[in-house]
Image (cartoon, rainbow, N blue to C red; front, top):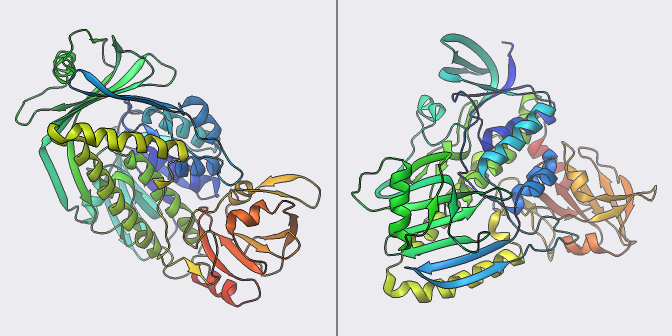
Length: 503
């Protein structure tokens, strides 16, 4: 049966937009719908981590995001009305192998706007006000029923991906369980609002206490700040400027903090949930549809974007009928453990923020300083590794990187004398093979070709140093920028590996 589109993406948040951009740039037809009447307002997720910036590099928007974002962090921590910690982290300097060494701060609504603009450049746009009302599957595709302005249409797609948030319609229609817990006593009021009376104005102000917290985070390049303030258990709260003003005064212990008119208000409830499965036949879950957790650590948006980029290249091969049997199953095998790790890390972060006051002061002093130091050092805990994943083969020992790690960047010189970044090579839609010889040459091949490829100079040995491999070693980088194979160049591992992913 013929299809109307290669992939139907349900949900136009950061996850769905990333997936749509990746599919379209790879030449796959894509329809992306969202039940909201238009783009969502609100800062929501705020941190863009280094690995996410690497994804944005591949999509062609990393520079745009960085220019719109803030890279340094000025932090002031309070216990009651007293500041007990003040520190600033300057942006980490890029290196030859790590062009995006640290996180940046950008409200989610701005990140989504940049992704929508990129999608438009690629020739696609979001169908807002379109709601998925039903789906059926067979061996050849998915039939979706979509309601728009009271009219229903039937759309036939080869695959469908639910990126439609914690209340996912796709997940419910598929009958996939979403076990976990909801803590009704752990709620917060979130707002985007101008804040006056806090100094320094460019700092993130964080109040901690027994089972409560408040944070004021300024937007980059705007007078607006994101305000997050916890709500006492059992207290009834409606999102309003009056309630927000009262909570800010209570949490800070100050009456001189003045608020403007919020542009966005929302009540957040603590949920910690992970989908039983990420796949059902030709339908998949990604982002908050598959995992929800606390906002601590900025895992939500970043984890969803990583889901999308892991799945995009696999769907590309599947739609083209070039995927080896079982390739699509590797999405859940790689990303569900990453989702579980994000849940665990964010839960630990929230627990540390509501430590009883008798131990809070030494905990803050002990933890905040090292946290800022890690941010200055690059924040390299932002990405999962797939060391034990089904697509990671480590057949050579004593390498600096391992199969399942993100591939480092570096600069090579082409035979014509031009300088080329490895990230430029990874941006291509297929696999990249790097073969290292004894003469400071790196031979670049695009699998499935098994030939030696084109020789590029590595005059200072910096690329070989970044990978830490011996002469006579070949490294295969997957289309999502992760290392799939490290093996002897002359061995049988390369064709065997490619037969696991390519038909």
